[in-house]
Image (cartoon, rainbow, N blue to C red; front, side, top):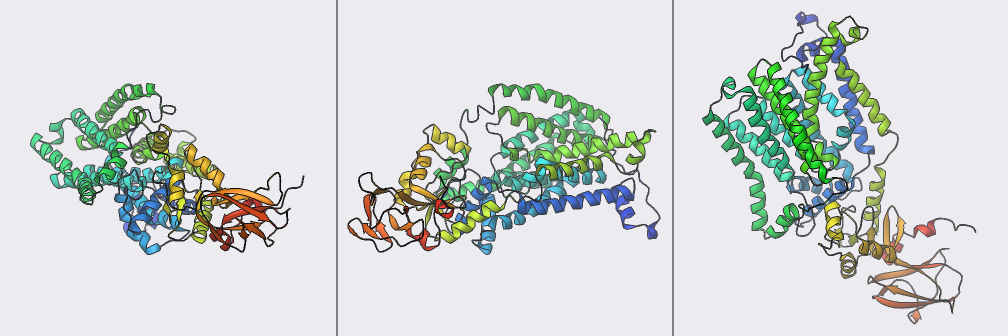
Length: 589
């Protein structure tokens, strides 16, 4: 494997007259100012592209779900007990005070993406430092650019979700462990950082396993004596590391137990997430063979890396990072029950550190030959061309001129206009953010499977009646019973909002008589398609405006027939919401 040397080969120019680009090139050990300018330009493009896509890339439903839990903390509710969530709570608790300062705004998700953005740069800094430890500053800076412009990593690394705190904490842990010789204080800090990872997501168990497998194998391949490490010192560092891991998640668990929420905390974080045969369709059983087939090749490749690296400390670091990557992805494929794109966030930066070292090594070799491409590679290395291709792929994949983020903002603007803080809503995952949900389960993938298997009660309809829920939003999956209830009892009024109501249909015997059934007790108004005044008798008394209707059958007798009428939640009518069907001209037959 061709790898870039850890020692810079560039010669510093005479001091006083060097340009800024040349001084940057000297600092990073680059070929010259052309490479530095290329790296600086691509880094700037990466940052600008990320800032633009933060405001235009569609919002994932998980972003709203996390935001709803943060809103709940800020309003005095307790995670797990009052609002469902199947993630550890550090992310939500940390950001709740910041949300309290911003308040209920339709643009809240833009704000929170920007507030979380510094964690991306923390991850980028860690990537650079890890690249510097394994190869050189030059490899570190190119690793940051290659990872940042990689399409999958680019888009998922700025979403407002727990993974974008989790992954930088993991990179901080790795950087702490390998950037300097291992000591007991350094092991304590590394363990504390991994403990914070567990406090954000229990998926960190796979990261811990990668460390536990990668470190001993790398130590064996390089040799303990060559690294100058004693068994006593290694035992002390290991004990300190594991003790520190327990501090943060242990404190969180103890706090919930003392608050009387241990049962809910345990269910949401552990019992709920462990569901056999969760994703059998997209995760076939035979995938279990991926790990035992692939990982031995990773060990063999790590052995070759050690042999090709003369300095033992550098050889250990390279083999260690390579084994973490070689363990993590095959284990994820073989044993992880439910795979999503964000599971790869801790992997991409480490992988691109290795890719950067390889590309720079290949580029340096090609530059020595008398080839047509060599004269270009002597000025700008291979990673620059790869990064440029990644940039154009991002533009082609998600054109910047298409705004996909506005949909969620329009929904939130409608929610804030339509409802009061005391109103309940029926939604899928908390996409209304600022209102209490009448249905405790969040219909993410694991919960949907539990609902389909009958392990969790589908009582959305009953809860909607109990809480007088007059607004529903169905932007994702819903259990069958809940979905049917929404279709039968709620009317679309725009921007994915549905309001409780009924289209009134004349009886076959009398065109002025309309019988209907109310399920949600609330104040209702009857409105006409043509905005005309509605006159008639509601339940035997003259209709004169909003009236509270109890569940059951009701009758409206219209004074004159021929006008299409709808029964709608009075608050929606007062706030200028009308059925979508009324907002378009009647189609001509």
